[in-house]
Image (cartoon, rainbow, N blue to C red; front, side, top):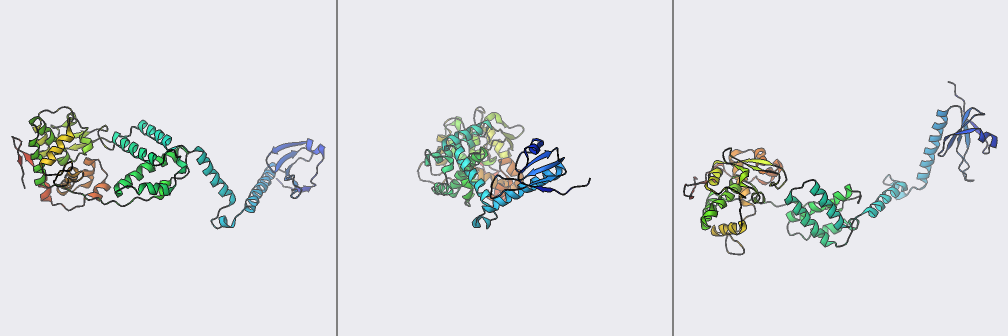
Length: 399
């Protein structure tokens, strides 16, 4: 189809011509179909005497709309360029970009919530997601501490410097990193809810942690098991069962305090750590070594929880009898989580399979690789898993 060049007309047009027009495009520049001319009018007039604009006819609708879009785009670009800033141009940005950025912050500030309210909504969400109880308790406690440090403040009022100052009060890098993780969770949740546009915690880096894995040796473990004799006969066996599951199966202390005897299958030789017991909310099965099964078999009253009542008192009494400092009394320091760390170190020395160990312990392979590089000989490992009870409850060490 042959095309006709557009024809310019004067800015004014007769009333009769307008009455014969049909609107095709309402936005500037307007496009009308003129029946008398049988062509399309692109009306680029602005109503501004300093920028009168023009009117042009096009033979086809497509040509007219294409020209209208070009004019609209040019006007937008020229308008944006008219408001350019040298400082913004240096970064390839316009004033329009700056306005949009600032508006987003203003909207976020208007939508921001008090810290206390945001915490309650986050905890409610985590309950719906069935977050593990221990993780929930840790999150709740840390966020309550954070809210107490900034009473009555909103999320939007917290700057990275505020978070940095708060975290600097932690006494160890591990505590600081844990607090940072929980606060990061709160602000990430706020961003998901469109209450914030930026997370102030991201500017605060994690600190490297000094994780010194300490272990007991076979002699020390034997002494600890032997110290259970200082307890009453009916509870000494259950305390040995607890120590065996911690030292010979590597189950976390917090999991052991919730574990039930019904979760242990001595015939099949494994312990089932259900999601209700697991620290991370994920179930797993932990195989039992022969010496662990032997110590568990000594306990005749196999019902209820493994730890039983008054566990803390009995555990302190056993450690004190084995020569460890308890409640300020003289003695050797009791290393944190030493039974689980001993299990991991000695099991790895014997079996040399980090992936399998990670599965048993409910950890990632990365954590196992990071924390259990301490050189332990295979002989030391075998000595650990050769700690067996005699019929009367006394200990045989095969070293």
